[in-house]
Length: 128
Image (spheres, helix red, strand yellow):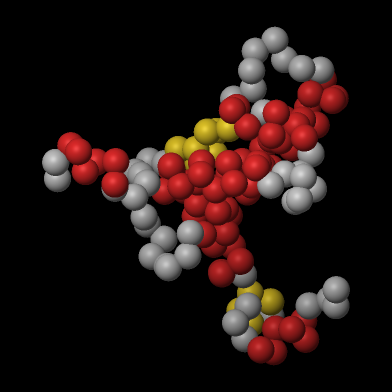
């Protein structure tokens, strides 16, 4: 592929950052603490290989990573409240592989042998 086309290659890492930015831009509407937006430059995303590896039509990996970025930002804000702001900028790194593994738990979880797709599983869950 010519170098000029390199920018058009889909990057899950870049897309996770894009989704994270979209979340930060809607922080007030989403009721995110202002510290999430203030510290958004401290959040970065990485992958051992920047390619799609969760073969579904949704951006689950990228969205899960972006949400983990929000979670890391909130954790950093809590740490700042508890321990004070550090002398150096916090560095929040989110692994796309680990974010995906976190999400896979929902697909693999079973209750009494029933998966989340089994209609009978609802009888095993507490009401909301």
